[in-house]
Length: 506
Image (tube, rainbow, N blue to C red; front, side):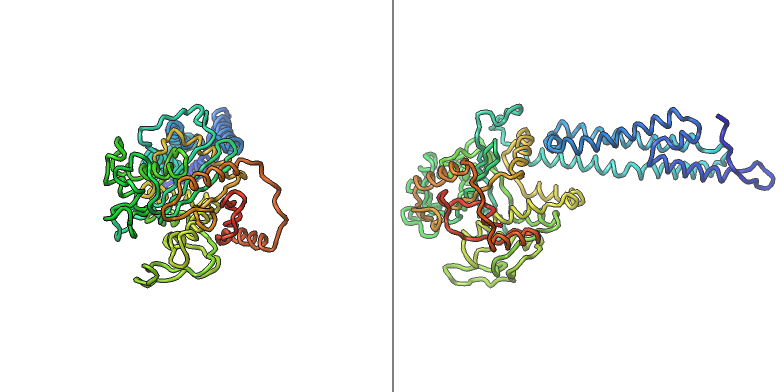
């Protein structure tokens, strides 16, 4: 092929400077940064040019195919340390290769005879162009590294649970996870777990039962290892354990676990508290609690903010702040959440979930479940990606768990099953919904039977849904508006107090 002619201009009768050729070379380099091989083809190096084009096409097509055809498998892969390392290495290699292609593309079309100043200037421009091309890839590699670091930090496990990575659900029809919301504010000593829910999940169908325990559960039966300290049931630091007064609520048990390492030998500080709560609640419900997840509610608002907020439906006006003791307002509210559908930032979402002065603990328990559902339903992938660094930092500072990282692929797969139509039942331990249940001195038999019945009923085949009603239509409108319907308190179902979360939240 005949060599390319480069346009130029003469200066003071000297040899012409190929200015037009330089601009053309820079333009071809820009084009090659987008579509590999264009500069090589223009320079007559067709084999190399078409090879580069083919590689780029294969890369784009292959990535799109894998992303579309193997979405579920990819979700499982991106929570595995090995695959994350592979992804990081792959992104870095791609960034380097892309930069080399940009620089080499300029070299093959750069006109000869450029003065030193123009060579240096044009070379610097091409290097800057290569760096600009690499910047998104470097950001992606860094984000992947942050994800790996976040997962390994949060899901470090406690070293006491072995995981069969090849078949984690072998001989395990259900997994029971204790979800704790801990409030460790400046006005409190230690962490009080004001939100306590056991998620009992069928590992095949994903059907889930949420068993919520009231924070004010008092003088409840305790496992044998705790009876030396509390022979009459849990009474906390009460001077008279037979008549504890206002002492010894369930939400104080975390603090006792941290104070008494002998109750949870083998666990370090920060692990003893949740494990003691885990043991007590497992004993009360008759379930083996496999893992716990503790969310510090003060950091929860940062997670909501990083996600761009959440839309909820507020059933009635709720106070923000304030305090009521024995029916007397000791601290006035600093504001109110008005009734209606609102898009809340992290701080207001936190108060939506924690406020109880307008009603009681049981209404709050329902609001907390609906808030979790709204956050899960409304999570915007674009906002998550855009605020990934902030979200990862908030998660590391907010979430603690003993779930090992090796179990994450199986949990991701199971969560996909839950989202694809599994039924989620809610069974709060509420005296108005569970017969013969009492917050003070609850019956161990009643609590265990209620849990067993709710779980057994969740395993029965689903019945046909009733015809649409005006209230159902209202709930549908609320869902289209981006928020669940407000938590309702309907009569107990045949499952002994368990109700579908769809009926509670809409």
